[in-house]
Length: 129
Image (cartoon, rainbow, N blue to C red):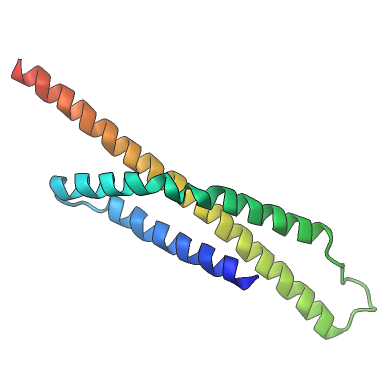
């Protein structure tokens, strides 16, 4: 079970690095090449959205069917294990939501940059006329 969370963690880290690189100021030629490269990689990396949604459903199902440890019949170690599982579930929810949010941010930044490029081309054509 931990492998899927490690994969998602690495994907979120890569998305965060890409988002930082996209938003840093850089020369126009370098920026346009980088945006076109990222745009090509966006569609195959869309897998992160259904993967995260499936993981969220798994967390929800496990939360609904988890044994509650609130009474006095629970030992201290059982209570600690229960609280640890709750904290892990909360961390994993944040990880899933972060993956989807970062994907959407990268998509929007690339789309805005392409729109800006097309508007600049139209403006350049009007200036040349």
